Image 1 (cartoon, rainbow, N blue to C red):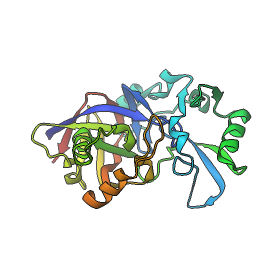
Image 2: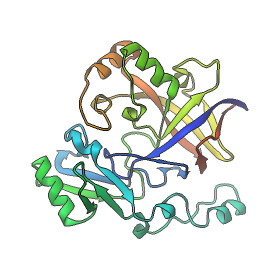
Image 3: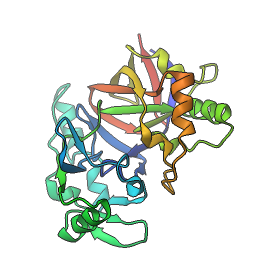
Length: 263
């Protein structure tokens, strides 16, 4: 195996399309990162194939800050090491639903229990929609693939091309990566179809490039839109930035972990 980079930072998003949280380590399962996008707002009158109410429709959702009330218990299964010691591929028991209760801070500082009637009423009022409801599942509610990866070199390239400081958080990746010296800015594109080992155990397959949507035009702090970003990516990079991955071998990922190309 060949070392090609390191994990610069790890991010997960307790509620789909709301603010993310940076974490030091987390268990990554076949369904995705533990605690990632377990909650999502659904519009009962929306497209049945993609019914989510997101920042595409309500831009200031990005400014909502959800957090797990029992943060420490949401990072890995309690008996992970015991399960992994038995045989390769033993599926560890996940925590119960109560471990994943969330409170959310609104842009004006008000704090709600995410699942409360008061919060749902608040969102319905802002969205001017009575058909929204909260959906919960321990199977992450990602758009397309369980993991998303984005390199700091690509972020720097886009900053230079657009002549502005691009915040990496616009791309809402799970794993932000720093490639080793000598790798080109868009090196992740070259890894499509390849297998990577991250840390001691986690292995993923890089499936495809990540097609981008309106959300990357929104400033993660202010929700202010800059359509020039997606226009540039469409014209200069065929509409893609970053890559998607699927999990082949479950395991922990820690900030600073080495990334190796499995050959």
